[in-house]
Image (tube, rainbow, N blue to C red; front, side, top):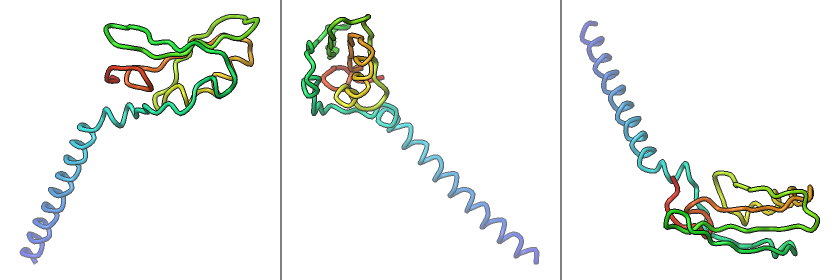
Length: 125
């Protein structure tokens, strides 16, 4: 009976060791790919404000030696101007519906892509 207990303990230790190795490997993978997980980039700009029939100015601004891409989208009789920063994933092309809500409230919109997204340069971080 004592041998059976030692055999079970040895088997349990091996099992726990394998679980620990698997968890460590998973954590290493997450660490290695964390930028891709946190900053899912989209460079494809499949549409622009012209697709909605809006007049706009395509902007490429110098920021710390890199280019930040954006659009200035005016509206007639505007009540003000809003700077629009999109969420973590995607780019401006996927945010035109959100921008249309701001235009509904008669606001000019200055929208830009974070570094690495859309036509903006530099690695996101």
